[in-house]
Length: 462
Image 1 (cartoon, rainbow, N blue to C red):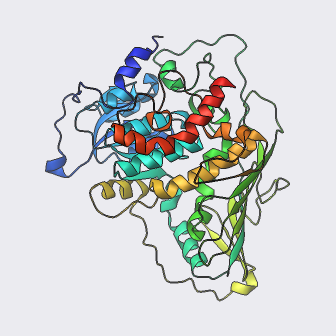
Image 2: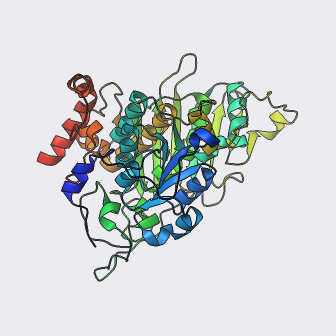
Image 3: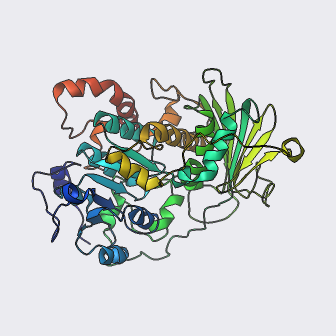
């Protein structure tokens, strides 16, 4: 397998190169048909659903590090250019926007490069692999005035909207307590007993991206990356952005002031994320709304590790506890509790319009029609909150969060706010390396970069 050289990577500059590539057999038709020219990075599994969601536009270029998994997408869009290297996709002339549906560990590398190139961005949750990467994503989107959307598709469904209306109408009163649970556990993964051969057509070096090199093993590639800390954040990072989205939206939550997470391993295997997780979040008061204590659980079917059967019929769900009653919700249904208090309940008149579709919201916003509800300003807060849970979990500490200084106040915990980047894969918006900013712009960014640089220097020098 031919590896990507550092020279070729730096030359590409994590952005748009000097030479522009034109997609074969395709003439840009945006001005004629009103369609948006798209590049799609990742085309299999979850990424395939994202591709389907934007398939009505002009798909100029496709990218996937595994050629064998890209066959269906390439057959569907035969006129689209195809690349294994996302940087070559960003060089395609005429692309207006990019969809990133790749593993968490390359979200920020790919997403920031796309936004630096002026491309509107749709990116899967949890937006990035680390807290400081999420912050860089938000800042880059703002600086370039781009239309963004995070892939929390459930946000567009009717049930969440009706729950938000009920909570915000005060039906269950003042809410100070929320419990959230998700029943999934990481599947057991085992490393190969003998060195594994990299499959033909799979560019493993590009798949690793910014992660320090490690020998290939099928235990942690493709979907299984979620269950190894180098690449993902377990069920917590995978699912909390969907379920914690509901209380964040309904209660207008900001970043937490403190998080304390604990875990338990109940099954064997080489995966590094735990099976059971419990995280206690404390959010500050917002205007007239009180402070909120939220507890997240994963690996159980109710609000507590002892729940091995669906709690009140909800194997995964959110429980709002208010001064006048409770509300329990899943993806597609909700109930007010206790039943006898809400027998004659009439829902409040809808105030949140039904969505035209999660992907379509993004596409129409690019055209200038409306705004995305899961733009990075909103979803970035949600993603950071989720990832701060993993910072506490991995450090073994209760953490406090200083948003202004971007620190937990603990050197041990701060080390998990960012990763050490493989040489040649640094992100300028975080490390300052290979930055194309002007001197004045660089000076204005220095305060933003300082926390990441401090942490990275500590990781390098011990």
